[in-house]
Image (cartoon, rainbow, N blue to C red):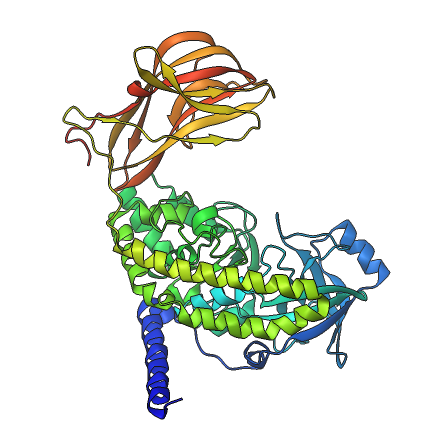
Length: 546
């Protein structure tokens, strides 16, 4: 290759690396992840795939099968050379990734649980993830590197081939745990309270405290949840700013969404940690976790509003919205062009391919397809992010001079099998949205429509007809009716009824809130038709809110 071209390519790579450093420092500021080199660095930077044999005595196997959450003792043999005795081990994972002991379980290991001061390559706690939801074995590694490129703390990742009591359980993702050593790598002080977000829980749940010298009464979490639920939006925003490092949170939320982390905090109240950082006056920093299902939907929206408490507070405030929107724009150079991540995928996949081939020739062939799919999704996401960044802000629902907005483009939702949704013809050349409960005896189904609203008083109106609607057993709220998502109906229709007007009033106090309108049927059997031309939202606020 031409020497001049090689020199230009080298300069380009250096410029790209410098750009990433500038972006990370600008975005994360004092949170920017430190480039700490210690005993554990060689494990994650060296690229070697460890061979780990985990031995558990019959007595301890009985214990772990009876209750898989407490630690039991095990022996870990690394590369048939180094032995670690009295290592703590327990099963990990939730819906989707959890596997029983006799299957291919995901494991958490703690090197000093029963043998103080023992460490595994400088780590106290680490995870062996079975990657059953990520056949590329690379989502966690790539996305953690994306977070750290943005200057945001995220666990380091490598790989290991694992045997469990002599049974070959295959290739695993080895990931460092959230503990005091992790905190020490990323924060000036590492003695604050660290909580595990658990399974689909928000910060108002009784989260498990993993680390910290603070009180065990969860008073810090309760205070944060109370602030996020304050009914006055201006006071709420001010209070949450006292408890949360908002600048870092918008980076966290942007990165979760840009990597399509649908199962993270900002989308699903799942897979996260919260750290009350003493160096920031006890302010909360959210940490990413469980990034094994990423880039699955390259077109995932960046700007739709979600339900988690802190995400809602930020996105429902004009100030928070603008900060989030700007952060997405600032982070875009990390994702696009996607070349650096496509190259990184190739590099790690090349390292893993021989190990997978040892396990199975068929698995090795399939693995190449999974890598191809991952690269396609990363490239598609990079293009999509550029498109979304250039789009205008979502528009508020428009009302006419009488304060009325017609509602079309409803979509279906159902929690039950056998339910039938239809758009039907009605007399007078009119249309209707129909829900038929079917014959299963259990119908929870609806037509829904999301609208973006500003502060105001609103009323959802709809006329509907019912035929033979029978309520669910022991459910006072079952019937046909209308409401707003996350609220209870104030009226309902049972039995058979001709065209009946229903109304549901509600108030929006935030600067901006995405509201989901619901036309629903909860019944054992029966049918409801909502008359399309009567579906309107009325703004009763003088000045029409927005």
